[in-house]
Image 1 (cartoon, helix red, strand yellow):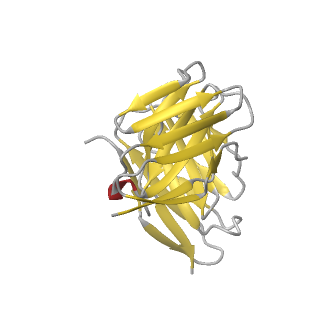
Image 2 (spheres, chains in turn cyan, red):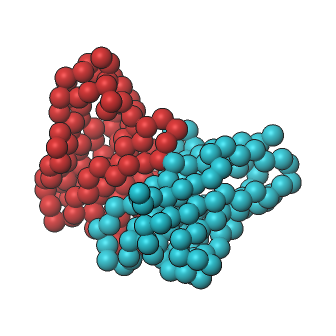
Image 3 (cartoon, chains in turn orange, blue):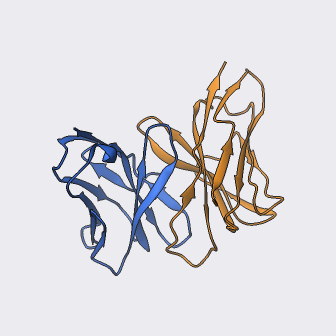
Length: 115
Length: 110
């Protein structure tokens, strides 16, 4: 079955440490997105990529970095500069921008906590 | 920035009853989408309504859109315990980026 796989499901970060969250999709989708979800806050866009080797900052990119070397993979690194990283991180994708009117497909998320 | 705002923020009903959720937004849109999220899981797309549509149905779901009032409603008919989840509206303004509301928690009691 096609879908989006996020790993790990739970991740713990020590002070000053960078951690990388994995997002892999086998849907052959062009565009991929990273969101952060805090309790009662809804989803906020961190970074997105509409094509391989290109990505754009979202609303809350500070303290995060991404790469898009392969179509199926869009890893997110939470750097030590992100002072409040505890949150639920969600990865999503859509088939082919900029057609518009395409629903997003989501992975099951990674919950990141501070040790 | 959050554009959509769901109302009410929480709703508790009995199985078999209908549930209505409202969403208000601020700027012009290409489409509005509704998603469901079960606890600890990712979001699942429910329905997309384009800016030139007024009503759309999918199974037990009915969505309306009033662009003059910048609002949408999601109606779930004959609710089931399995409908217990958080529901989000999200707007797309043409850039393929979605702006989500804060969500509404629905509890359906058996």
